[in-house]
Length: 90
Image 1: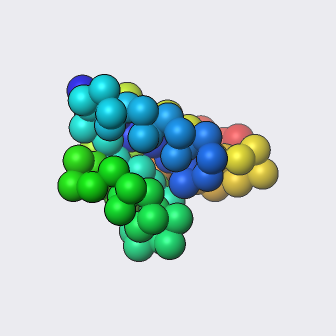
Image 2: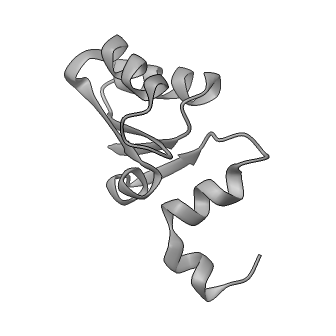
């Protein structure tokens, strides 16, 4: 299954790593496609995963896990799925 993990912190890292280990296709997203935390995680799992922006990652996944912190989650979700936020006000 293709799983998108939004957020490169401890929670996102732990979930994404385990999902890769059990055989899922995983993409981790952050504000920038080449974030240092994302690059470090990618090196730790090898070529079994991908990193990208929140929007790229959300488009990739059959399932999207929001692992961003509370202070930044709304902005991350706006970047991940702008069409949803255009149609609704938060």
